[in-house]
Image 1 (cartoon, rainbow, N blue to C red):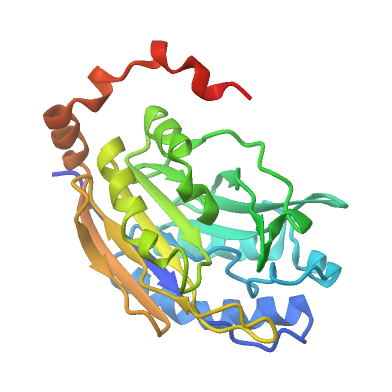
Image 2: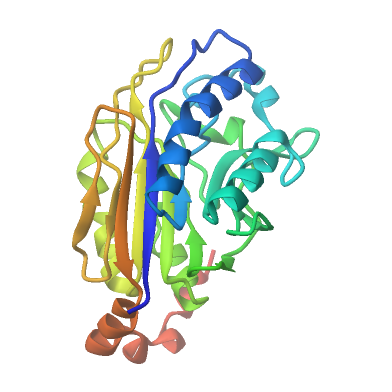
Length: 287
């Protein structure tokens, strides 16, 4: 039995959006610390936060103020703090923040820290939406990190971020690169796409024979009020069964024990990888 314990933290914004990004970051981190400590007490081995977890979801605006929310990875204060906490709790931590690569070049990124506190690398969000209420191209350059899989102390870990989840190619690329567990930190509101929340990721888990942890923020964020972030974070197994799920309206840590041996069991049963026909898929990657 290759069983590990996973955790997801969903949270509402803890400051007014009129405040400085640095102040908002400090308050969000302060609010996360008890949940991180609880995860450590509960024996969580792989922990993930929501998309850009130190800030509001500022993309309904096109306000360059939010460029000041960026941090360097791994040398910024948030990643450095999480390295300390990862080592303290012997816990892998996925840290989704707004990254500054160089002045004027910013990415929606998740840093991955191993259980000994070492920085393993990062994934940069690949697919960037630009629709009403989600003006992400104003803030984020499309990611160029490819499909890294991180060989952590407990599992082979992949990361996909929010809007990425609508694109099956990345799930497959991560699985082909060896991922057993893929996390998807998100910021998604009730309305048009909510019915997809419990449809796409279980389907991706089945199609690729992996576990997926999907984490979404909660509450409404003024002044934009584009809708209610409905939480409902969950972990789904390679059979598409949701094995743990949070509520829709409260700050919450959810945990789930996952048996990585199921990856082999499900893949041997369905044999999707044996029956793939990459030789026939060339047109799919044409511009």
